[in-house]
Image (tube, rainbow, N blue to C red; front, side):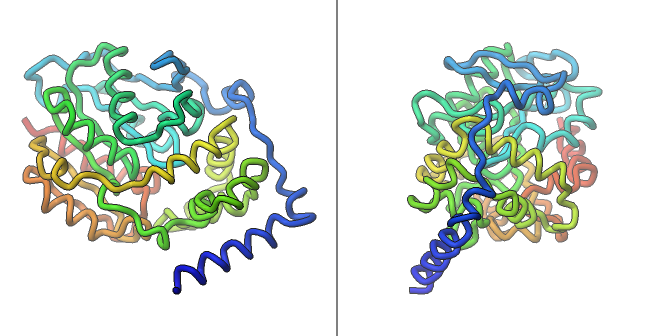
Length: 323
Protein backbone atom coordinates (compact mmCIF):
# COMPACT_ATOMS: atom_id res chain seq x y z
CA UNK A 1 0.00 0.00 0.00
CA UNK A 2 2.85 2.40 0.87
CA UNK A 3 4.43 1.74 -2.53
CA UNK A 4 1.11 2.49 -4.24
CA UNK A 5 0.77 5.80 -2.41
CA UNK A 6 4.37 6.72 -3.22
CA UNK A 7 3.84 5.95 -6.92
CA UNK A 8 0.70 8.06 -6.95
CA UNK A 9 2.50 11.01 -5.39
CA UNK A 10 5.39 10.62 -7.85
CA UNK A 11 2.96 10.65 -10.76
CA UNK A 12 1.11 13.67 -9.39
CA UNK A 13 4.38 15.49 -8.80
CA UNK A 14 5.54 14.70 -12.31
CA UNK A 15 2.29 16.00 -13.82
CA UNK A 16 2.61 19.24 -11.85
CA UNK A 17 6.31 19.47 -12.63
CA UNK A 18 5.95 18.92 -16.36
CA UNK A 19 2.59 20.57 -16.82
CA UNK A 20 1.94 23.89 -18.51
CA UNK A 21 4.79 26.37 -18.35
CA UNK A 22 7.01 23.73 -16.72
CA UNK A 23 6.78 21.54 -19.81
CA UNK A 24 7.86 24.45 -22.02
CA UNK A 25 10.68 25.45 -19.67
CA UNK A 26 12.12 21.94 -19.59
CA UNK A 27 11.67 21.15 -23.29
CA UNK A 28 14.82 19.27 -24.31
CA UNK A 29 14.81 17.42 -27.64
CA UNK A 30 17.38 14.75 -28.47
CA UNK A 31 20.85 15.86 -29.55
CA UNK A 32 22.70 14.10 -32.38
CA UNK A 33 25.96 12.52 -31.31
CA UNK A 34 27.83 14.83 -33.70
CA UNK A 35 26.75 17.78 -31.55
CA UNK A 36 28.15 16.22 -28.37
CA UNK A 37 31.52 14.88 -29.52
CA UNK A 38 33.31 18.23 -29.58
CA UNK A 39 33.05 18.51 -25.81
CA UNK A 40 32.91 14.90 -24.63
CA UNK A 41 34.93 12.90 -27.17
CA UNK A 42 38.21 14.75 -27.26
CA UNK A 43 41.39 12.65 -27.78
CA UNK A 44 42.12 9.93 -26.78
CA UNK A 45 38.48 9.16 -27.57
CA UNK A 46 37.72 7.31 -30.76
CA UNK A 47 34.77 5.49 -32.31
CA UNK A 48 34.99 1.88 -33.49
CA UNK A 49 32.30 -0.24 -35.11
CA UNK A 50 31.12 -3.17 -33.01
CA UNK A 51 28.02 -5.23 -33.78
CA UNK A 52 26.93 -2.67 -36.34
CA UNK A 53 27.10 0.44 -34.17
CA UNK A 54 29.66 3.13 -33.49
CA UNK A 55 31.11 2.70 -30.00
CA UNK A 56 32.76 5.54 -28.10
CA UNK A 57 35.97 4.15 -26.61
CA UNK A 58 39.25 5.14 -24.96
CA UNK A 59 42.16 2.70 -25.16
CA UNK A 60 45.20 4.03 -23.30
CA UNK A 61 48.57 2.84 -22.04
CA UNK A 62 50.89 0.11 -23.37
CA UNK A 63 49.21 -1.96 -26.09
CA UNK A 64 49.51 -5.25 -24.22
CA UNK A 65 47.17 -7.94 -25.64
CA UNK A 66 47.09 -9.92 -22.37
CA UNK A 67 49.06 -13.07 -23.02
CA UNK A 68 47.79 -16.36 -21.53
CA UNK A 69 49.41 -17.02 -18.16
CA UNK A 70 50.45 -13.40 -17.57
CA UNK A 71 49.98 -12.07 -14.00
CA UNK A 72 47.27 -9.54 -13.13
CA UNK A 73 49.95 -6.86 -12.83
CA UNK A 74 50.56 -6.89 -16.61
CA UNK A 75 47.11 -7.60 -18.03
CA UNK A 76 44.88 -4.97 -19.68
CA UNK A 77 42.16 -3.51 -17.46
CA UNK A 78 38.69 -3.15 -19.02
CA UNK A 79 36.22 -0.89 -17.19
CA UNK A 80 32.40 -0.83 -17.53
CA UNK A 81 30.22 2.05 -16.32
CA UNK A 82 26.76 1.87 -14.78
CA UNK A 83 23.25 2.96 -15.77
CA UNK A 84 23.09 6.41 -17.37
CA UNK A 85 26.84 6.91 -16.85
CA UNK A 86 29.69 6.92 -19.37
CA UNK A 87 33.37 6.07 -19.76
CA UNK A 88 34.10 9.42 -18.06
CA UNK A 89 33.21 7.90 -14.68
CA UNK A 90 36.59 6.11 -14.79
CA UNK A 91 38.71 9.17 -15.66
CA UNK A 92 40.45 9.30 -12.27
CA UNK A 93 41.38 5.61 -12.38
CA UNK A 94 42.54 5.80 -15.99
CA UNK A 95 44.75 8.81 -15.30
CA UNK A 96 46.48 6.92 -12.50
CA UNK A 97 46.79 3.49 -14.16
CA UNK A 98 47.46 4.21 -17.85
CA UNK A 99 51.09 5.13 -17.23
CA UNK A 100 52.09 1.49 -16.82
CA UNK A 101 49.21 -0.67 -18.07
CA UNK A 102 46.59 -0.81 -20.80
CA UNK A 103 43.27 0.71 -19.69
CA UNK A 104 40.18 0.30 -21.91
CA UNK A 105 36.82 1.92 -21.23
CA UNK A 106 33.82 2.51 -23.46
CA UNK A 107 30.23 3.69 -23.46
CA UNK A 108 27.87 0.74 -23.27
CA UNK A 109 24.94 0.44 -25.73
CA UNK A 110 21.97 2.47 -24.54
CA UNK A 111 24.09 5.11 -22.88
CA UNK A 112 26.28 8.14 -23.49
CA UNK A 113 27.81 8.65 -26.94
CA UNK A 114 27.44 5.02 -28.07
CA UNK A 115 23.66 5.34 -27.88
CA UNK A 116 20.93 2.75 -28.42
CA UNK A 117 21.41 -0.50 -30.28
CA UNK A 118 19.26 -1.56 -33.21
CA UNK A 119 17.84 -4.64 -31.45
CA UNK A 120 16.64 -2.62 -28.43
CA UNK A 121 18.02 -5.46 -26.29
CA UNK A 122 19.67 -4.35 -23.07
CA UNK A 123 19.68 -7.72 -21.34
CA UNK A 124 22.77 -8.84 -19.45
CA UNK A 125 23.29 -11.63 -21.98
CA UNK A 126 23.37 -9.06 -24.81
CA UNK A 127 25.88 -6.94 -22.89
CA UNK A 128 28.13 -9.95 -22.25
CA UNK A 129 28.26 -10.63 -25.99
CA UNK A 130 28.97 -6.96 -26.63
CA UNK A 131 31.88 -6.76 -24.16
CA UNK A 132 33.37 -9.92 -25.65
CA UNK A 133 33.03 -8.46 -29.15
CA UNK A 134 34.82 -5.25 -28.10
CA UNK A 135 37.85 -7.02 -26.59
CA UNK A 136 37.97 -9.37 -29.61
CA UNK A 137 38.11 -6.40 -31.94
CA UNK A 138 40.88 -4.81 -29.86
CA UNK A 139 42.89 -8.03 -29.97
CA UNK A 140 42.80 -8.51 -26.19
CA UNK A 141 43.10 -12.16 -25.16
CA UNK A 142 42.97 -12.05 -21.33
CA UNK A 143 42.15 -9.11 -19.11
CA UNK A 144 41.05 -7.87 -15.72
CA UNK A 145 37.43 -6.71 -15.85
CA UNK A 146 35.97 -4.03 -13.60
CA UNK A 147 32.51 -2.54 -13.42
CA UNK A 148 30.32 -0.23 -11.39
CA UNK A 149 26.61 -0.87 -10.72
CA UNK A 150 25.13 -2.29 -13.96
CA UNK A 151 28.70 -2.48 -15.30
CA UNK A 152 29.60 -4.61 -12.30
CA UNK A 153 26.82 -7.05 -13.09
CA UNK A 154 27.95 -7.24 -16.72
CA UNK A 155 31.51 -7.79 -15.47
CA UNK A 156 30.74 -10.76 -13.24
CA UNK A 157 28.37 -12.24 -15.82
CA UNK A 158 31.13 -12.00 -18.44
CA UNK A 159 33.60 -13.63 -16.04
CA UNK A 160 31.16 -16.50 -15.54
CA UNK A 161 30.56 -16.84 -19.30
CA UNK A 162 34.21 -16.72 -20.46
CA UNK A 163 36.29 -17.55 -17.37
CA UNK A 164 39.33 -18.44 -19.47
CA UNK A 165 39.57 -14.81 -20.60
CA UNK A 166 38.72 -12.86 -17.44
CA UNK A 167 41.69 -13.26 -15.11
CA UNK A 168 40.47 -10.99 -12.33
CA UNK A 169 37.38 -9.01 -11.28
CA UNK A 170 36.84 -5.60 -9.71
CA UNK A 171 33.24 -5.09 -8.61
CA UNK A 172 32.29 -1.56 -7.55
CA UNK A 173 28.82 -1.34 -5.96
CA UNK A 174 27.76 -3.98 -8.47
CA UNK A 175 24.18 -5.01 -9.14
CA UNK A 176 23.08 -8.62 -9.29
CA UNK A 177 21.00 -9.26 -6.20
CA UNK A 178 18.10 -7.09 -7.33
CA UNK A 179 17.25 -3.44 -6.75
CA UNK A 180 14.45 -2.19 -4.53
CA UNK A 181 12.69 0.35 -6.80
CA UNK A 182 11.88 2.43 -3.73
CA UNK A 183 15.62 3.07 -3.32
CA UNK A 184 16.11 4.32 -6.89
CA UNK A 185 16.88 8.01 -7.45
CA UNK A 186 14.12 10.24 -8.80
CA UNK A 187 15.28 10.16 -12.43
CA UNK A 188 15.22 6.35 -12.54
CA UNK A 189 11.81 6.17 -10.86
CA UNK A 190 10.33 8.60 -13.39
CA UNK A 191 11.92 6.69 -16.29
CA UNK A 192 10.14 3.55 -15.08
CA UNK A 193 6.68 5.14 -15.14
CA UNK A 194 4.96 4.65 -18.55
CA UNK A 195 3.18 8.03 -18.76
CA UNK A 196 6.02 10.08 -17.33
CA UNK A 197 8.77 8.42 -19.39
CA UNK A 198 6.88 9.41 -22.55
CA UNK A 199 7.07 13.02 -21.38
CA UNK A 200 10.72 12.61 -20.46
CA UNK A 201 11.51 11.66 -24.05
CA UNK A 202 10.97 15.35 -24.90
CA UNK A 203 11.82 17.11 -21.64
CA UNK A 204 14.71 16.96 -19.19
CA UNK A 205 14.59 19.14 -16.10
CA UNK A 206 18.17 19.83 -15.04
CA UNK A 207 17.00 19.59 -11.43
CA UNK A 208 16.05 15.92 -11.90
CA UNK A 209 19.51 15.12 -13.25
CA UNK A 210 21.22 17.02 -10.43
CA UNK A 211 19.00 15.30 -7.85
CA UNK A 212 19.99 11.90 -9.27
CA UNK A 213 23.71 12.74 -9.23
CA UNK A 214 23.55 14.01 -5.65
CA UNK A 215 21.59 10.91 -4.62
CA UNK A 216 24.32 8.51 -5.75
CA UNK A 217 27.13 10.49 -4.08
CA UNK A 218 27.90 9.90 -0.42
CA UNK A 219 29.02 13.53 -0.24
CA UNK A 220 26.53 15.40 -2.47
CA UNK A 221 28.51 18.63 -2.20
CA UNK A 222 31.07 17.08 -4.56
CA UNK A 223 28.56 17.21 -7.43
CA UNK A 224 29.72 20.08 -9.68
CA UNK A 225 27.86 21.97 -12.43
CA UNK A 226 30.22 20.41 -15.00
CA UNK A 227 29.35 16.92 -13.76
CA UNK A 228 25.65 17.75 -14.14
CA UNK A 229 26.41 19.06 -17.66
CA UNK A 230 27.97 15.71 -18.50
CA UNK A 231 25.02 13.68 -17.26
CA UNK A 232 22.51 15.97 -18.99
CA UNK A 233 24.30 15.72 -22.34
CA UNK A 234 24.75 11.96 -22.10
CA UNK A 235 21.02 11.60 -21.39
CA UNK A 236 20.09 13.86 -24.32
CA UNK A 237 22.09 11.81 -26.82
CA UNK A 238 19.54 10.75 -29.42
CA UNK A 239 17.65 7.62 -28.34
CA UNK A 240 19.12 7.27 -24.85
CA UNK A 241 16.02 8.23 -22.89
CA UNK A 242 13.92 5.53 -24.51
CA UNK A 243 16.79 3.06 -24.15
CA UNK A 244 16.93 3.81 -20.40
CA UNK A 245 13.27 2.91 -20.01
CA UNK A 246 13.88 -0.40 -21.80
CA UNK A 247 16.98 -1.12 -19.67
CA UNK A 248 15.02 -0.56 -16.46
CA UNK A 249 12.29 -2.92 -17.72
CA UNK A 250 14.87 -5.69 -18.12
CA UNK A 251 15.87 -5.56 -14.46
CA UNK A 252 19.02 -5.91 -12.37
CA UNK A 253 18.64 -9.34 -10.80
CA UNK A 254 21.25 -11.94 -11.74
CA UNK A 255 21.80 -15.65 -11.22
CA UNK A 256 23.21 -16.34 -7.72
CA UNK A 257 24.57 -19.68 -8.93
CA UNK A 258 26.66 -17.87 -11.55
CA UNK A 259 28.05 -15.56 -8.87
CA UNK A 260 28.98 -18.54 -6.67
CA UNK A 261 30.70 -20.19 -9.63
CA UNK A 262 33.29 -17.41 -9.96
CA UNK A 263 36.85 -18.50 -9.27
CA UNK A 264 38.75 -15.37 -10.33
CA UNK A 265 40.55 -13.21 -7.73
CA UNK A 266 37.98 -10.51 -6.98
CA UNK A 267 38.21 -7.08 -5.37
CA UNK A 268 34.87 -5.75 -4.13
CA UNK A 269 34.68 -2.01 -3.45
CA UNK A 270 31.58 -0.49 -1.86
CA UNK A 271 30.36 2.88 -0.71
CA UNK A 272 29.09 2.79 2.86
CA UNK A 273 26.53 5.49 1.99
CA UNK A 274 25.19 3.72 -1.11
CA UNK A 275 21.41 4.14 -0.89
CA UNK A 276 20.65 2.35 -4.15
CA UNK A 277 22.61 -0.85 -3.42
CA UNK A 278 23.39 -0.85 0.31
CA UNK A 279 26.62 -2.34 1.73
CA UNK A 280 24.79 -5.57 2.59
CA UNK A 281 24.94 -6.37 -1.13
CA UNK A 282 28.72 -6.10 -1.03
CA UNK A 283 28.79 -8.50 1.88
CA UNK A 284 26.71 -10.97 -0.15
CA UNK A 285 29.19 -10.80 -3.02
CA UNK A 286 32.06 -11.35 -0.59
CA UNK A 287 30.30 -14.39 0.88
CA UNK A 288 29.38 -15.90 -2.50
CA UNK A 289 32.74 -15.36 -4.27
CA UNK A 290 35.32 -17.51 -2.52
CA UNK A 291 38.44 -15.69 -3.75
CA UNK A 292 37.24 -12.17 -2.96
CA UNK A 293 38.06 -9.28 -0.64
CA UNK A 294 35.62 -6.54 0.34
CA UNK A 295 36.65 -2.94 1.05
CA UNK A 296 33.99 -0.48 2.27
CA UNK A 297 34.47 3.30 2.10
CA UNK A 298 32.20 4.58 4.85
CA UNK A 299 31.80 8.11 3.51
CA UNK A 300 31.25 7.34 -0.18
CA UNK A 301 28.14 6.47 -2.18
CA UNK A 302 27.14 4.42 -5.20
CA UNK A 303 29.93 5.62 -7.52
CA UNK A 304 33.01 5.65 -5.26
CA UNK A 305 35.42 5.47 -8.22
CA UNK A 306 34.04 8.81 -9.43
CA UNK A 307 33.54 10.42 -6.03
CA UNK A 308 37.05 9.68 -4.72
CA UNK A 309 39.25 8.19 -7.47
CA UNK A 310 42.53 8.55 -5.57
CA UNK A 311 41.46 6.56 -2.52
CA UNK A 312 39.63 3.86 -4.46
CA UNK A 313 42.31 3.33 -7.12
CA UNK A 314 44.88 2.79 -4.37
CA UNK A 315 43.02 -0.41 -3.48
CA UNK A 316 43.00 -1.39 -7.16
CA UNK A 317 46.76 -0.95 -7.43
CA UNK A 318 47.27 -3.26 -4.47
CA UNK A 319 44.92 -5.85 -5.95
CA UNK A 320 46.66 -5.82 -9.33
CA UNK A 321 50.06 -6.46 -7.77
CA UNK A 322 49.14 -9.98 -6.67
CA UNK A 323 50.67 -12.81 -8.69
